Amino acid sequence: RQPGTARYIVFTCGKPLAHVNASVCQGIGDRVRGIMEALRLAVHLRRVLLIDWEQPAPLETFLLPAGLPAGGDPSELSTASASTGNSSQRPPVIDWRNKPHYRVKDETDLAAYVTFPSKPFPRSDMPKELQEPGIRRRFGNATRVIAYSSNYQDLGRNWLPGPYLGKQQGSWQRLCVFNRLFQPSEAVAQGIADERRRLFGASDVPYVAVHWRVGGQPFEPRIWKYQTAQSEQVHSYAAALVCARMVAAAKGITAPTLIITDNLLIRNQIAAGWFRGVVGPESVAKHVTLSAASDHLATF
Image (cartoon, rainbow, N blue to C red):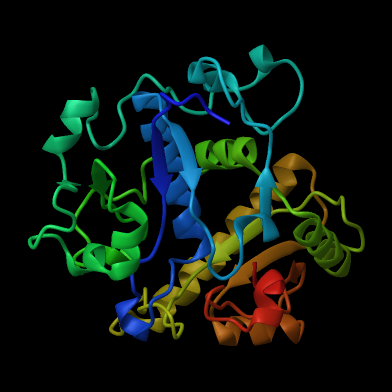
């Protein structure tokens, strides 16, 4: 669909998760952050962004395009957001004039920052993750391969060299960019509506949510250090609840606070009604690729 002179950037994931001994892609959040960073890079190099997402199912199973402008000046995104209406009235998403973390100025500058020329591809000094046959088949003709991590758990693990994307933009900026890139598929949207009706009685009720992670799932290392006192964890959870209730009060929100957590004890206590004004999902946190095929949509 593009002119023959068009150039491309392809986002892909194929790095093995060493801690589960499985060649699977990253989780949903890590992949989405990587896609948004690839978009920033594509804007600066004026390339077409292609998304390679086949695990555990094609991307369109979960997410559909949201109408991001396919041509013209990408800087028009600087005033775009998830809201509707006149773009001039929307808050800015990202100042696209800022260089991405790669310090990119032009095509030649790419070679200066954690990139791997592909002739011959792969080079013997590349990380083993980039020497996999699947990577070689898909990107044997690529002019550059850029390796970066979007998961803070990768820090210090020497899995892949490259910039760390975990705090590249604030969460509100990511939200706006995500909603400009994607919209949920019909199946995912229906599942979200059903879950909101179960939690709040209606699918359009405004609410405040807290994401409280402890870690230690089968597919990820533990976030809290083992020596961290349990009282500190309890204090952080209580502080998050207080903050959520203050936000709800300021916004006039009366719905229960939604708690998303991987802590099994807290999940069970919420289900048993130990906390007034708090609800939680019935689903259990799991890696979408490691879940059963019949559970992919529900997990997403």
